[in-house]
Image (tube, rainbow, N blue to C red):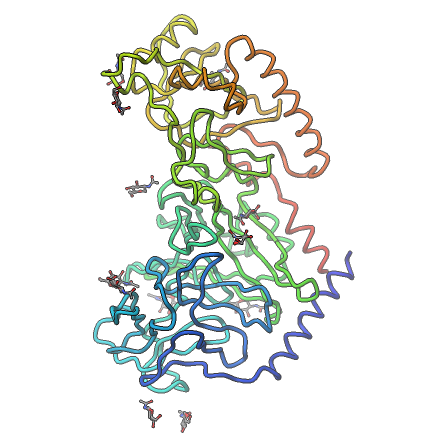
Length: 505
Ligand SMILES: *[C@@H]1O[C@H](CO)[C@@H](O)[C@H](O)[C@H]1NC(C)=O
Ligand SMILES: *[C@@H]1O[C@H](CO)[C@@H](O)[C@H](O)[C@H]1NC(C)=O
Ligand SMILES: *[C@@H]1O[C@H](CO)[C@@H](O)[C@H](O)[C@H]1NC(C)=O
Ligand SMILES: *[C@@H]1O[C@H](CO)[C@@H](O)[C@H](O)[C@H]1NC(C)=O
Ligand SMILES: *[C@@H]1O[C@H](CO)[C@@H](O)[C@H](O)[C@H]1NC(C)=O
Ligand SMILES: *[C@@H]1O[C@H](CO)[C@@H](O)[C@H](O)[C@H]1NC(C)=O
Ligand SMILES: *[C@@H]1O[C@H](CO)[C@@H](O)[C@H](O)[C@H]1NC(C)=O
Ligand SMILES: *[C@@H]1O[C@H](CO)[C@@H](O)[C@H](O)[C@H]1NC(C)=O
Ligand SMILES: *[C@@H]1O[C@H](CO)[C@@H](O)[C@H](O)[C@H]1NC(C)=O
Ligand SMILES: *[C@@H]1O[C@H](CO)[C@@H](O)[C@H](O)[C@H]1NC(C)=O
Ligand SMILES: *[C@@H]1O[C@H](CO)[C@@H](O)[C@H](O)[C@H]1NC(C)=O
Ligand SMILES: *[C@@H]1O[C@H](CO)[C@@H](O)[C@H](O)[C@H]1NC(C)=O
């Protein structure tokens, strides 16, 4: 394994060098009286990156983006997108050109849909560099003047070597990574990776720019690593550096061996991945990723969705619920969450036919957000308290008392291992959902069946847990208390990078 991977890397390096001299050089810039349209592209001088129109996945919409040239990375890999939120419907009638000192994308009706938005700019050339940076400058393409605008300052979901992630307190510019919504929609999703704006010198991954669910821990400039990412100690591929002064703070990185093709990407499921292209196998090789478990990503499955770390599908709707946006859900964009199949009796006071709502028992669930505790004597009182209040959607009862939840249930996780105890959640559903349970047969657990079904679930969970334990001995079972997620990251040196690093040595 040791020498094999090494060989692979050497091979890809050799291939890279070969390319550098044999790719025929196409134009690497768009100048004042040129434009880009249809299948036209520009290619960086060394034949590494290409810019043009593309459609993500099966989408029929067109975006202007930057990708590695086919000769270098055979799998089309988009590293930057201009008009993330404003696709055009036809690439042949759309035009990317310099207009009034800006790079502007015009759609088929000659309406500008995306622009670099500089005021009083005299930029005349947009040049694609071998770093993957698109720069806008005055003068011709061989001008060396400071860029007036550069794509590296406006990253999408990919962090390339040489680019910065940080902020400038004077210009108020920030460089953050934001996930795509789905594999077919590069519009900004809910997840972002940024430098802690409060100045802790740590990276955060956040949900909706607010809720933090992963942190790198503060940067230790002496040992050049993040305190909660101890596996960086074994890294000899990435040369991270941190700059901070009165005006700006940022991280950047380079590769000790600049011929290695590597990138960071914040993927659609809210995890940061570090990937390296291996030419012989012609695929991206995962080097490192965080957070380790997908269910650590905050609210990955949306309202009334439930996350599962061990099944092949990350997210399911709770029983009695269905995806709000089916198509997005199928593309693994779960952010829309789930909606009730049948309205609650409570919510429609005029309905005379409806029966009282009932509660579905859900064993081994993690604690949802925003619980409220209620002072009652027993589980029956807990249930009737919840039933009385239309805004109560679920309750739970244990030795320490009664808890209720109102409105949407967020950040739910289905726990399967007997080690992660979890709680039994009682979910409010319309009575008719229980009658339908046989025809739906989605495993509604009602009344007497609850006990035995729960037993089976625990047994299944145990089996899965044992299998998983054998597979990845190093990854620990998750605690169901989310506030410990970051400290857990701190304490558990992850396996991937260290293993891989050893391989390369
Ligand atoms: C525009 O194109 C013409 C002919 O193709 C060329 O002579 C001229 O230098 C170009 N102007 C600029 C500003 O690039
Ligand atoms: C794209 O469409 C093809 C053919 O309809 C299908 O096989 C494939 O799974 C689709 N890909 C995605 C990402 O939806
Ligand atoms: C161009 O954009 C404008 C404004 O968004 C829109 O009204 C128009 O339909 C678009 N034209 C085409 C051909 O897409
Ligand atoms: C440019 O400015 C317009 C209007 O202020 C804004 O709608 C648009 O989002 C901006 N585009 C970019 C790429 O920042
Ligand atoms: C830029 O390139 C043009 C030809 O493409 C050349 O005439 C000019 O001297 C170059 N300028 C500089 C500063 O190298
Ligand atoms: C994200 O935050 C904004 C306010 O900052 C809020 O309006 C929006 O509803 C939030 N999105 C979700 C999915 O909660
Ligand atoms: C690592 O990066 C720093 C800052 O960019 C640079 O000064 C240093 O030479 C690099 N180290 C190596 C070994 O490439
Ligand atoms: C901060 O650091 C940057 C990059 O090293 C430098 O360009 C800038 O002048 C510095 N600003 C101050 C106020 O020191
Ligand atoms: C995101 O990254 C994680 C960790 O590498 C991976 O397990 C997951 O499948 C990725 N998600 C997508 C949608 O590619
Ligand atoms: C409430 O009940 C009435 C009569 O049964 C029905 O027409 C209406 O659609 C219901 N409203 C909701 C929100 O379910
Ligand atoms: C139901 O919940 C709402 C929102 O918390 C609260 O204002 C109301 O007093 C509750 N009703 C009862 C009967 O407890
Ligand atoms: C009881 O449940 C609450 C939340 O519903 C939880 O915080 C608490 O730890 C549980 N206590 C016991 C003893 O399981």
